[in-house]
Structures are given as structure tokens and as C-alpha cells.
Image (cartoon, rainbow, N blue to C red):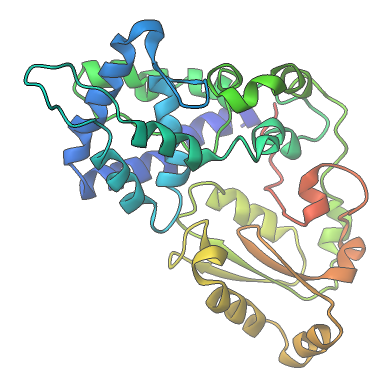
Length: 320
């Protein structure tokens, strides 16, 4: 099965769909609320409503709330409370409903693209090796548009599914903070000469103690691919858990790190700590002795941001 087929299969039965279903099971009243918002946006002039910064909120843009709302431990509650205040109060009977400034302002702050535009710009390219991304998520989504089309779902009375950690080309038109980066984004998605992310031979011969947490219900890191990646690292010790989601370090850093350190040899771990040699990085959450990265095939001096920060994506690239 090639990468395109695997991405397509993962999207069709992925944690993204599961998290949407769980959200609507917890807050079934939000099915109608979100359908109404989608219909309102679609019927508005230009297919959306202006955002405070100068962008436009469209039905497909609304779906981006799943990135924060569905993928973290308190995301469901935050998303629900946000939609509780989606409409301005109707003071004059019969007046047309309007999406509140509170909601529009909160929508933009949820993503923080005004302060973190590189997240969108580099999102796919950091996983590339020897191939261009060519807007991989956008192309795979097109194969499942019947399930993910917000306007169609609202018209048919089906729940509107929100999306996850994906970046689409139209975001560089609709989100004001990303518009200056549109040309650069289109150049990056066509770049092919990305270097290898890994040296599998060195990873297979790893001598460095390493422990990692794999979050079973992580919406952003595919569980099966994470396990395949771990299988390539000699001597790795895994903690597979559904106690946390992708935000494990943010939600329970002390517990996560204590558990991972406990998986390693205590004397060795203390020695590394005494000499400030331990680096904590998230893969979902992974611990390596900092000065030993070159022994396992990761080059901190060249290549995508992924390698420089120590974050390890699955071997399967998002590019195909």
C-alpha cells in the first residue's frame, strides 16, 4: 500500500472521525448549533463573514476549530462553551441572527496564526524526505469530501465534522495573517529535494537509553505509525497509554516525565540529570540524552525543523 492509500485509509477511519463522534455524543445539542452556523456562513455574502483582523470565516474555515477543540484533554469543553456564545443576542423580535464578535475574535485567537505563521507554512514540509508535499492533506481530503463537506452535511441534517492538524491552501486566502506567506507556501509544497529524516541503520543499532510515551487516542500522531517508528529504534522502552492525549506534556508534565524516567535505568538517568544531558522532547513524548542524538542518526545541524527540535514524526512522510 503506497503513502497516498495509507493516508486515505487513515482519514476514512481515523481518530479525527472518532473524536468528532465522541464530541457530538457528549454535546448532542451542538449538532444543530454548528449546522446553523454553517448555513449562516454559506448564505452570507461572499460565502462567509468578515473576521476582526480582515480575513473571512467560511464553513470550511469553521471546521479548523477541531485542531484545538478535538485534540486536547479539555478541548471538548472549550469548544462547547465557545459555541454557546456564537450568536449575538436577538434584541429586536424577528431580526436576523448575527455571529457574535466574541466568537469571531475567539476563533482567530484559537489558532494564533498572527504570532505563529510558520506553523502553517512549514506544517507539511517538515515531514518530507525526497518528495514534495503538494498540499497532501488537501488532496486526501478531496477523496473524502462527501464525509467532510460542511455545507452538504448541514443541508442533509448530518453532524458537521471538524478537521484536525491539517493545513490547506485556501487558508492562505481566508486567514489574514497567512496571506503574506501564500507565495512562499506554494513554493515550499513543490520543493522536492528534502534530505532524509532518519538514518535507519543507526537507529537500528541505537545504544542510547530511550523511553517514549505513545498516546493511544492521539488525534495528531497515528498510533500504528508511531509503533512502526518505535520498532526501528533499538532498545526503546514504550509507555502506551490513553490517560493523555497529544497535550500530555502540557496537561501532566510531571507525571509523564516521571513515568518515562522510571522506565530508564535510575542511576543512568540521575547521572544524565546531574550533568544536564537530558533533553525532553515530544513525539508524542520522548526522552533522549541530549548529547547522544548523533549516535542514533539525527542531525541537529541540517534538515527540517523536526530534526532540529528533536521531534520525531512517523517514518511515513506526509508527502507522496
